[in-house]
Length: 344
Image (cartoon, rainbow, N blue to C red):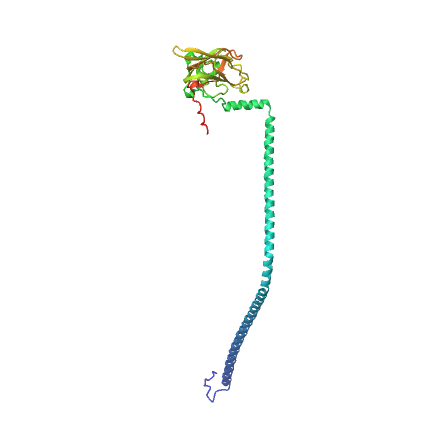
């Protein structure tokens, strides 16, 4: 059957309701005490934590204080002993300075002496090299000396005289009084029996300074002549002939070089030939200058070179270069250097 509901204050309520109320009150009290205990534990932990922090702070403070005390003690000891040390240093400083200057002087002297000895050794080495080169030059053979002389003559003209037969200054060839150029089959270029080019050099090649093998004027046989129209009238004094050396000759010989020849000065119309000298060219001396017999001195505008023989070639003769020397003014009227004034 269902249980009837009654209030607890009802005198007729059963005793089990009173027990239930008592049990609930006991549980509430236990929960309150538990919360109170937890709160006390938390506060106790905070107190302990704060106590540890204070302990660490005190420990660090003690350590710093000890370091400061040690520093203060060291500074005090240093201030006590420093004046005496300074006096000792002041006394010994001049001695040390003197020793330092002396050692520096000795070091500088030794360095300077080493430099001088090194320079002397370099100078000795240079002198030895120079002596070796001089000995080598002295030991040079005659052939090498001749070869060097030839190269000097080829590269540098040692005849320091004006050339009035130079083409670049206005000289030319009088073809009317000049022998014909030698025509050789090897000097022609053909195409289907038609001549295209003639490699034979004209006579005015002897008026140019380019003296190389083959760059010469050739005429047939061993007799011929060339007439040079000078740039202006000149009081003639010398004539120079030049040939290539045997060492660079394509044929290995000098049989085409001129041998005996005669020089004439030509002037007037019709041109009068004036004998100026007969000479012989020696091909071993590739540049030879011949004095002309122009006495009394006369000015000529044309010079004829008449060749009567060569050094053995029957087919043709070669002329490489002809130079004519002299002066524009008469030899006696050339300006002479003024005498120096006499000193008192």
